[in-house]
Image (cartoon, rainbow, N blue to C red; front, side):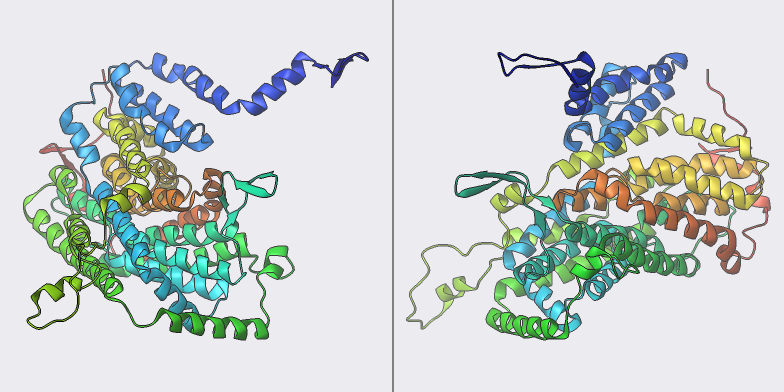
Length: 584
């Protein structure tokens, strides 16, 4: 809207209203950054306790995560800073050690380094071409095999390791498809400067987001199938045995038979949702569905081209063989070490000791060290030949992984995001704010058990978007156990509901380490992840509720009954009957 336009000058005078709108459009992030702490001050002032101080910090950081106000790496620095400034007393060394020296972070470090080694060896390209030769270049077939393979891997090893191993393979598949003109990995966003085109900030296309979010979500879903492959299930088992010593032991077959149908159903629905949302499945006349269509002649030409490319690769090189052996060794050792390490702790430790010392990342870190040590070729053997006319090498053989490769290719902000989001959430437990959450849920103690389970699933699902899966379960299960006893419901019933829902975070990078890894790997915009996660979240809530309220009765026939061992809860070495807890 123009207020005045002078004939003697080109100056355009805008009204104050237009100026304000323009300012808000350009600096809306700054407005959110400054106004959020002010608008949330009633939470801090009205209940001036340590618990609500931590809750205030949690809410501020949660809004920053949702709105993507500033870079996630910067937001991750805020919790520790605010804990110190507000005097919460939660910044002692023992607390920080529990946050930053844990298996999720060590797994992330190790698998991101292994990913760099895989890409350097070009093993992922060989595997990608072979995969497309066998299954073709149809997005529906490729996504099916990639998503379900990642789900299966996550059943037996950490979801972080499973997703990390799939990332270079998916990237190689997309690169090959881009070379053949089937898709574009990035949008070219820049400006033309004369004859040259300057690329400023390439953003991933929907194809890239589709594949990488698919493997991230699939790894989260697959991890809940077994005890050995999921820390959330391990913590669930340990809490049940620690808080209710007389309760029946939760064994592998019971949990596997209970969760496997849910995993398969969720994965099938996830596959259909992702293809519907990104690739136009069930929408044959949509633009994207017409774009990905391929004639028989094109498919035959691409098949021939792939065979030629694979022949040009030649035989498997020593570098590729070494990296492939390291990948296989990582999977075997991690699966075996997880089971053995977990069984040792269950025999002699309680839940409160286990979680802070459950370090299952030794196998993956050991394999990373091997990549730094092992050479890419066998040229050093020439020094030990008795009769050899070949010239000796003048330089040492390069190792499969070097620190320069790691320094230039690892997204270090992922570690800060995971550590500080967990610190923000675990502060709620240290300050006993999670007990207040339990008190808030006490209004529903007279509700029917299925309705109460749906409430718990929805409540835990929302909170788990702001911390890693195992951290959410560790912090929330004691409050859910008290709610179970107070509402005369079998604790396994509601604790299982909370465990399943906490394991399935699909909207934010803070919800799961795999979300942060794929987002940093291909620069997925936060709003893309939040919108794409709507379908998986609805699927997860519905399937989790069905598993707990219906299917669980077929596996645990007495789960809907109130057992005698659930009359009291053992907490802090005391046998108590929980009620609504109040603090001075």
